[in-house]
Image (cartoon, rainbow, N blue to C red; front, side, top):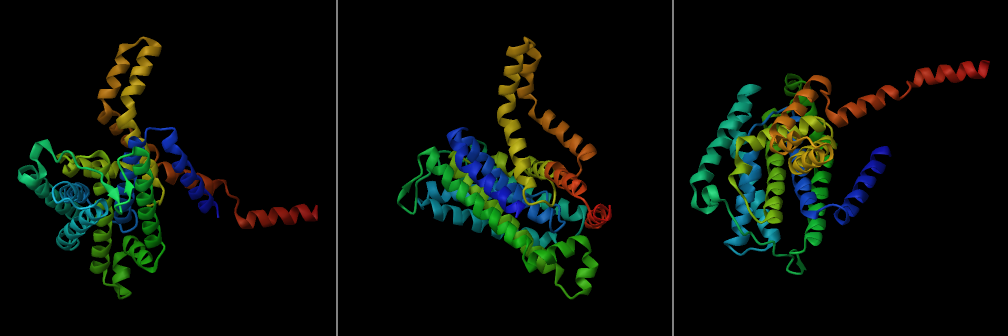
Length: 337
């Protein structure tokens, strides 16, 4: 019940947020939150560390942008095209990678993703270093005009909520329980008769498709797609979001995405504020040192908050909660007294 109340409060806050905060910034946060949740489905609940998720995120963005701008397809078909491309890449990449474990799996995903990065660098339909510019938002179902930031925000919010609901349903389904079993003890899952490779591949493709949905939505929101989204650093960024928020928790990646994207976008303003308030010009350099700050946060999380923000809060709540046996004994002693 507490989780349902928390989700309801979060949804209510999200509905009010665009009237207080710049909608485009919020849409960017929602896209990266969905991206981080999709990545967490693979690493947090299946135990597979992929360093190639930028391929899904970026290639889906290029596919959606090309479908909408060049081919003139509607908004929703563009998103479907992005998801389809990401899922197809997931089938190929996953089919090659899941036969290896540990660091070998990670390095295969990184190598394949970098191959796609160089394809995007040379391919004419991506625009090379200039990127794919001027992607129109169009309209939803040919009726709702998406040129308004406020209207677009609520559409993106609906997409993000639907994606999160799908991930939550997957985690709590029998399929999700098998994924957890594979993460905890793969040899035992094999001994119970499960086709582990099939489950890994399905999880990989589902994670890639949801990452593609996030990337395609982001392209439509911002109106462009660049090589940044297919570079290996984007894969590192989503790992950072997941670890900071809480690996293996449902809401942790959302919190991590909010923290990291807020730092990237608002750290410069914060530095200027400190410089104006204190007169120390050195604070203005903070905005140019986002990678240093995020790297410092990553080190702090690894050393002091290994469960991430949400993970530590959950653990703290468990410690605060009295054990049933102790409560019972206390009640008995009180009654006897």
